[in-house]
Amino acid sequence: MDWFTGNGSDRHLFLLAVILYGVSMIHSVFLWRKGFRRDDRINYLMLLGAFALHTTALFQRGFSLNRCPVNNLFEAMMFFTWATTLAYLIIGLMPRLRFIGAFASPVLFVVGVFSLMPSLDPPHGDEPVFSGGLQSLHAATIMLAYGAFSLCAAAAALFLMQQHNLKFDKLRAMLSLLPSIERLDKVASRLALVGFVLLTIGLAAGGHLPRKDGVAYWKDTKVLWSAFLWVFYGGLLFGRMRAVFTGRRFAIGLIGIFVFLVLTFWGTNLLSTLHQP
Image 1 (tube, one colour):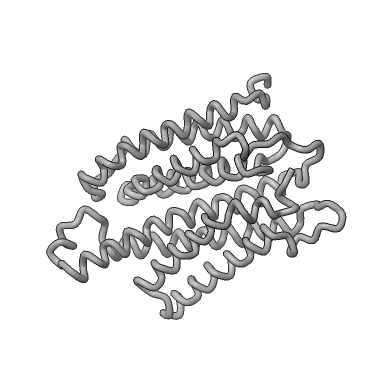
Image 2 (cartoon, one colour):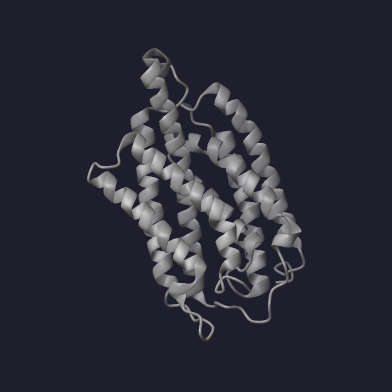
């Protein structure tokens, strides 16, 4: 158990994982040039190796704190990138969908580098706000939802690129290195639905967690922000079901909501009473 101690080795392992994400990102440049229609095992294996290092770092941090490590911005972003990688690895079990890794690795690398800033990992307080297995379920499902949303935004961006090809040059679209527009639309919608279900489970689990006296769950800044995301994604999926948001509108909606998520994630975390150590 000496290996699982909070002596900084978790940050070193996470740094190695981020470096491997960077190598995967560089490899993705060549994947862009060669095309996305082939089964790219090399990029998948690199992300799998990074995930192994990342998981070990996450477990080390969790064992050192005796709770799920999502108590400051460093830990939240470390969990976010871990969840995104896990979501991709599950999807990548289907060879035809492994191309998404070429878009996931740059996001993982950039977020990983930013999260390693020392100021984002201050010392923890004496008493955790949350504890127990329910807290782990809450944190895991929420972060997995963010991972699914990041991948569906990437698929939506590819959808718009391919739609542009179809609109202005049908021959170019037929010969394009990008996947088919039908395939991208299906991937984006399914990932959005998975993320929405995970977010629902995470919010429901969070409502049953123990809290400090006087702190209301549904009045917390981060919880309200997550509820807004739930409404946005739920409305978008309902609109798609009713044929209100389809095709280009649906793709733009997925990208817009995810951009909002990324731009406001850190600020709402800092304003949250429940999510500070």
